Image 1 (cartoon, one colour):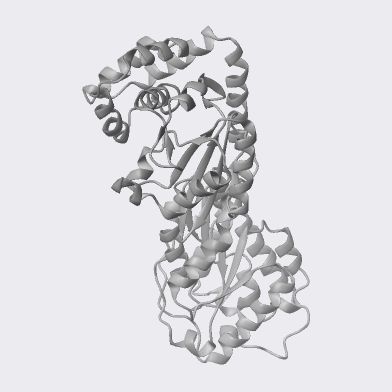
Image 2 (tube, helix red, strand yellow; image 1 turned 90 degrees about the vertical axis):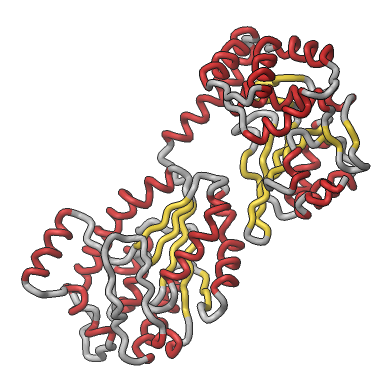
Length: 457
């Protein structure tokens, strides 16, 4: 019973809530939680009513539905981020994989074992059957934890008559004994063998074909769909506000959470020539020892009160920037989002509004902002101008282009003017303001708490 103390308190709370509501459940495929590892919970329910009630309890507890039954029949997955860690609860109403019912659950509940009044698990025989079926029909491989779990069971004095009877009902008695042999000898199973077993299951039970093909088609459609599936988080703000530091810190902290989904991708979205024309122009300006952007960035961020209300050159400069940034979005960012990844960018197209004092007067820029693909979450990083002026430059950006250590600021007033322009941008685009004078760990946790739901697509 000492092992029960290792259960993560967040998962334990969910189990207790189900128990408190008198739901009839079984913690099948959950042996890992008793060792204090893994933050996933697989629970099967005896009745559909209990299954539906469990979903409501999770939602009331702050969990969000990630995978509905439209993705895979007979199960739902709910997730929640707590203390910067992701927890997933898989609710099952049948023992099924790939939309195919593999084995009945009535005998599972009849033979279940009560570790205490609220922790209910399968018998050793059913645990062996469930994990072996999972290897054959879902996982297509034998993991180390399955070897560690099933090897001791195979050495026990278990009811082989029951196991053989159930394996025969499932239709894979020969295949299951083959897996038992591999586990005993600590050998791996081939993926082709598992796929062959699944195909034979479908052929023997034609009714399974409709369910399986339905899932297969949905999976193909999701992969070829042009819909943006990932989550885009962008940081904007003046130089020295902490964008690069925050991007790196969030990228590192988010890695465990994003790996549960489709991974992540970091990108520096400051100015870099991307198209052939931009690269050619950059080379030409370099030869002439000119820097068109620096020279027209209002003389090192100075506010020129005499500048005209309309400047055609700067309007064209904004359009030029828009086309360059748009190509970078479609060719670099969008492919990652289509894969469902979390994308975190240091800077974004919106930074132009703060960089140029002419921006609030621009006729075209606000329209370009509305046309430009919007991040799921935009965070404006801000601090006192005096604090920013004292900060050094963090060179760690997601870019191959080397950055110098010069920020371009001489006094805090220029920083304050630029920050005011960023604040005014909130009337055009929604974003959250993050005070980077707070501890980095506090801000990272705050951003994760605000943004993790964006991954549930």
